[in-house]
Image (cartoon, rainbow, N blue to C red; front, side, top):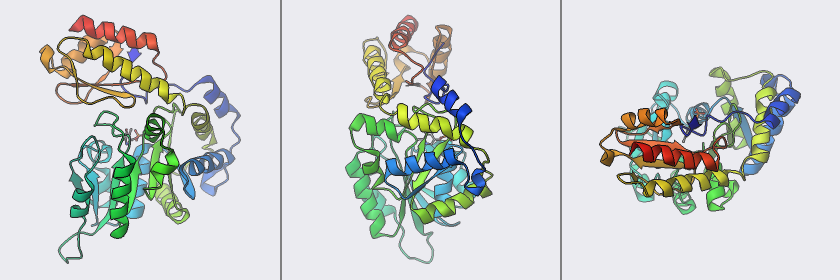
Length: 339
Ligand SMILES: *Cc1c(COP(=O)(O)O)cnc(C)c1O
């Protein structure tokens, strides 16, 4: 099977497995796991933040942002198709007791003036805006890179209004590699940032949330409350260190494969792309074939290729390090056979 469902399907490499086996460990709830501490320092340095925290998942990292930055009854501004709003089970309202306010973006980027207009005043009737969440790259917008200038403009508005900014950077390193803008530069226009070790970077488990020391101290407590305080977590943090050391630059290969896939699809009758391809995600529209996305995917599976539906007529492909150039060619042959 050629698995293009997500970049989460990657299996840990030999080097990662060995690193896990050999990891020095301690009790991380006591702050005594040297491998976790090393990963957290490495991540904080990469992002130019004071501190970082190893968390179980991207979803948990995002929850810690809302729990720490906001209070129940506050309002959080989000892009309408953001992962936090669409795919985290309403967790912001469940755990943080916040109300979400969505703004429709353009390729995942909210217009700064829309954000400014959505920030609440001090009217006694209104919830207080305490947090703005950004997403880069933007999953639902097809792995779109949110421009640095857009982040900068929103950050400035946020600071003028004493509102915090959190970046859901599950795929931040895809943006870094494709744009040539460093993680530090992106992170400089956000108070806190979450990124996934277990997507394109290929680690088996975990995410990082980074920010100021005092933020991380409070987030650590929230992580404990959520049951996310782990013990000898160096076993799972060690592959994360390998991921950051070895797997960032190679994302360019995934991007190359995604653009080859996109180019090939454009040459097939009745197929179109829903978004230009900037990173490792391809959104294909199958409406003109007369099939729904689900029907198309069943046929595709018979041909040995897996992808996911992303709307009634939208199929999402995500390239990852388990997918080679030959697999892209085979996937195109499979799609051609269906159409
Ligand atoms: C995958 C993803 C998450 C959540 O990460 P998990 O580790 O699956 O919880 C959050 N945001 C975006 C944009 C994602 O793609």
